[in-house]
Amino acid sequence: MAWKPHSVYCQAGFRRFGYVKMAIPRLLLVLAMVATLVFEPSYAQGTSIPGDGQTEEEQSALAAETAETAETAETSGFERPEDQRLASGTRSVGKWLADRGVNDPRPIETLLGNGLLSPSYFDWKQRLWMEKDIAFGGYVSANVQWGSEDSPSHSISETLFLFTWEPVHDADSAGRLIMGLAHDRTFGHPTTREFANFQGLVETPNDLDTDPELTFTTLGLLHWEHEQWTGKDKGWGIRAGQIYAPSYFGSARYLDDDRRFFMARPLATPAGAQWVGYNDIGLGINGIFWKGAWYASAAVIDGKANRKYPDFSSLMDGEFLYIGEVGYERDFDGPNEAAVRLTVSHLDLKAGENPKLGSGQSIMVSADRRFNNRWALAARWSKSYNRLSADYRELYSLAFMWLSPLERVRDIAGFGLFFGDPSEADKGRESGFEMFYGFKLTQALGVMGNIQYWSRDDPDEIETSSWVFGLRMEFAY
Image (cartoon, rainbow, N blue to C red; front, top):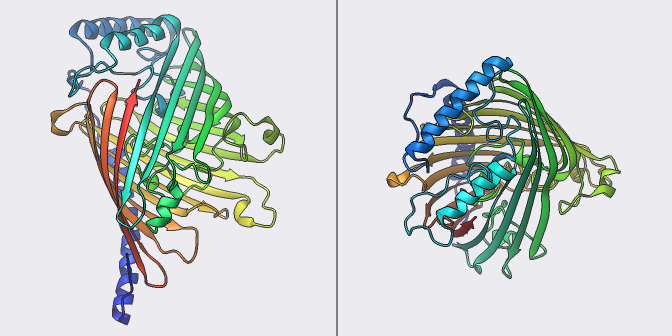
């Protein structure tokens, strides 16, 4: 739907409102950062959430194991984590394996019982990790969206398989092989991009997009990861092989890249950094150093690989993505997690006749904060310079999360806001919000419904707006 204001007064008012809309996300982002660092977590005993899957016997065994670990730390001269294999300094396989692999919390209490996967299945997964050093996880999802503007509905599925094998786990080191395979399929037309065009949107309401083809398959992760503890709360790690950069750089929990929470791309990925989604998968090397809550990470990755499989021919061209990050993480994966990250990048590509396809830089600030596993905040700002071939040149994203809605520990609800500045000069600032509620039906089956609203004020004073309704079903194994 589109309309044009007629008076000069209205035109000036809309311009002033546009400035206010861009000032609001900056203020909210600053407030989210302050909340991350100011509020101290409570580490009192008994803060675990009911339904976390642990019996009293298991908790007692964990306490005994922790005491034994502490005694070992005193004799060895540095403090190891409770279970070095579960609390990796290099973050193991990153956010991709959260709730699906090594740290899978199931079985849990669900609405319709166990379903196809019984508690014995999850017990077998845990024993497989502890006894054979193998962990895996993944899901199959179906996503359907409808828009308020005249267009067909949009349907797309995603299959994700994640695997880790850790043959090395000594007293002060660990080494593992990481693999991640994803397959996306659009069920006929419109594709995600075509659906967004029907709705008059610059960015897309679903981060998945196979356009112009209907399928996309990628071996996004296939690398070796090694970590070495060098003292109390400090050490280093290295990754080498096929790396999916957004899994390790610029992450803000709940503003992630696999639509487990938000479906709109501005809330599912740092779209203001133009290497994300275009130059983010390739052969490379990543080094990490940490001391206490602080860490630094840097990587060199093939900047123009085909994104589908390890591309050795492209690597030889010497056009790379250089990316670095410094961050602060407190109570990582805990009930009061707090994290702030600063990420910078330089993409070194030959421009040819189109400088928009050449080299460019980006900067990103991201943060997340949990409050006793009940509420959470996540925020991110990303901006690109010189290379402006993707949809946004700058993006603000902010999420408010309810982690135990209606006293259902494994359900989740969220509300997100975004403000984006398109790369095309003739497009005005785009903004909107998304609300969702996701609940578990069985151990494996989950359903999420969401509502999105998009709005844009173009320089010609035409306002474009659209409502998008979505439904996502996921089978997580």
